[in-house]
Image (cartoon, rainbow, N blue to C red; front, side):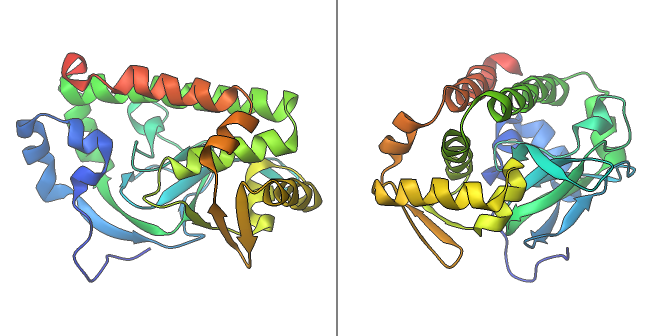
Length: 244
């Protein structure tokens, strides 16, 4: 992970930063460091100390729980709607999970000490981050329920839709092997589910590129979990004027 050379997307492409009052944003802006997030970059190791928090703009970061035997599964994703590193201001100080870049792109990072200084003002930043944390907890709990009770095809639809919500296009660069690792199932299960979606005309898949052809069809096929997560984020973060 290195500082990017060309002009990055502005920090207000991150929805949380964009929601801050002018004075709070102006206070943080000089300390926001633009970074390039490459596919597979590890932002946090499980148990690692948090030195920075990250605000993705065009990248998507996957948060994984890693088992003792090395197996892992995604428990949440963070894109331009949020921030990575909530353990810092929730009092944990260490990251309990592995965080890796799922979709390459750009973002900003802020030193943890500066984040805590702003959070401890008990002002708009604190209220906004607590709302976001509640929404993220909903995503985590719903993912656990989905992985236990719904089919691989439904899980794949949920994952595709949540990823699309964070991207400007309907195309994803992602291999079936990586998706299987995200969801925590065997690759053969993803191959079968993706094949079903392709035959139904909902997606097109070739050489690690997935193009969603019929988003409405995916929404009809997915389980309730996608809408639960989406509505909770909208409910908690839509009316930012009342939050801050």
